Amino acid sequence: MLKERTFETHLAVLIVGAGPTGLTLACELARRGVSFRLIEAVPGPQPGSRGKGIQPRTLEVFDNLGIVDRVMANGRMAMPMRSTAPDGVVKEIVTEGLGDRPDMPYTATLITPEWRVEEALRLRLMELGGTVEFGTKFSSFDQADESVAASVVKEGVTETIHARWLVGCDGGHSIVRKQAGISFEGETREEVRMIVADVEVDGLDRDAWHLWSHREGMFALCPLPSTNLFQFQAGIAPTDDPELSLANMQTILERLSGRTDIRLREPVWSSLWRANIRLVDRYREGRVFLAGDAAHIHSPAGGQGMNTGIQDAHNLGWKLAAVAEGAPEALLDSYEAERRPVAVGVLALSNARLKEATEQRSMVTRRDASTMQLGIGYRDSVLARDDRDDTAPLRAGDRAPDATGLTTFEGDRRLFDLTRGGRFTLVNFGATAPPEALPADVNVLKVRQQLEAPEDLLDSEGHLSRAYGATARSLVLIRPDGYIALISDTGDVSDVSDYLSMMA
Ligand SMILES: Cc1cc2nc3c(=O)[nH]c(=O)nc-3n(C[C@H](O)[C@H](O)[C@H](O)COP(=O)(O)OP(=O)(O)OC[C@H]3O[C@@H](n4cnc5c(N)ncnc54)[C@H](O)[C@@H]3O)c2cc1C
Image (cartoon, rainbow, N blue to C red; front, side):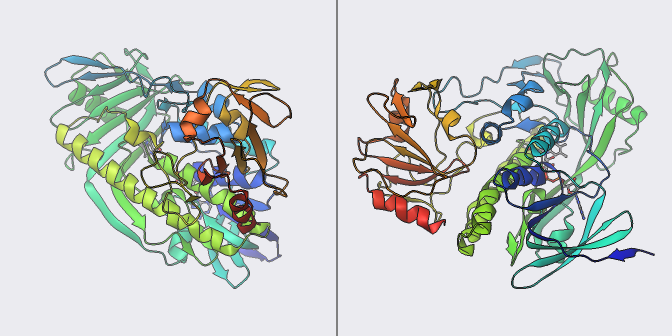
């Protein structure tokens, strides 16, 4: 029989699930000093390469969180692909990404195992003073006007945790979602299945992601950087044996690739994936929110799932922190308004890629701007304000572009170096009466002709003014998650003060 321990813990946020989404949210709250607990059902870090494609926009999030170097050290950018057609013709596909750009620090997809991403986030969380409570399972909640009471079980003891908000980052089978009565509309396609495993491979080089197309289904072996493993991916027909044994996987390899010289060793992790394509009808029920796979699941085609979850957390984190510190609760409504349309787009993209892959019997090798997530924006959001017309290439709500070639007292910098850390940043291109009385934590940058004060910078190569289409009076306010909150080309300082007072 379960023992029961009921003591009240008053905290701002209870996060359920320490996958990439929950860990990102925890880091966002920890770096702003907001109280939270992060509980995780399993006893320790999970193995498995799963989501191995990190998109450029997520790398920007990691840059802002201070972990991009750690993540990239365990990954490989723009992994080439080597594709073998059924007739044996081999094609090399070099994915150069978007090239060298002053407004984008990362222009290609990084391949690294998902557990490495989780490891980097956990380390960052520890540096920020947070921790993951492993072996602690959420079971149910009740919510009242001011708080949520959640029952969690650890080592057979039930604890009731009281928090202002509960965030379910507990994956596709989310119990938080079920308890909140939020429906998960969509379909399960039992006939679309894939064996995924991490395995050592003899007889294959690690220079490229190897793909084979076969009339019975696609097959791929992708070297996993920072390990001696490959990710094995094999589409299997409904009549195929789905057993996750070495013998079955070797048989599938030989049938789909036609290669008997490639030998697998015992897998260190394996999973049978079924196509599940679902999206919640709402991201919030009162004080309970959903993020990541708990809110949207789809096929891995296009490499979007983990990236979307991480960016959900990046969007929600600063808003929860602002409201915890006194901003109006209505700010939290913008989370669903901004992020659900993104998930709708991701489902459409990954469905199209899955259809293409199923028809071609091969993985879709195209890696273009549509999958890199750099075009995501929130122009229609209530949080987007500008005095530009509809034809302007850059509007409030868009991703705030980077810019290289900035000269500061500290040396040469790019804009993202100066916006790191998760605060609002005001870039003043020359408004004559700079806003007075800004909140102390707003990061102010002034574009000048010569350096006079610590916040001054020279736009030495003109990249900043060009990227922002700035006039000599423009004021640009950048949100903590790297999207443009406000642009005033007329340099109206009261716009900035009004906007920020809405967040206080
Ligand atoms: C083969 C494959 C390839 C993929 N490739 C890509 C890719 O290239 N790019 C990409 O972006 N994505 C990819 N994905 C998707 C990616 O793996 C997921 O989208 C990602 O793991 C979702 O992260 P999450 O944190 O939202 O959920 P999860 O990683 O599922 O984490 C949820 C956590 O919640 C915990 N939990 C569950 N219930 C409870 C409870 N009651 N109490 C406490 N804790 C609980 C779980 O133990 C788990 O640790 C791929 C997936 C697969 C299977």
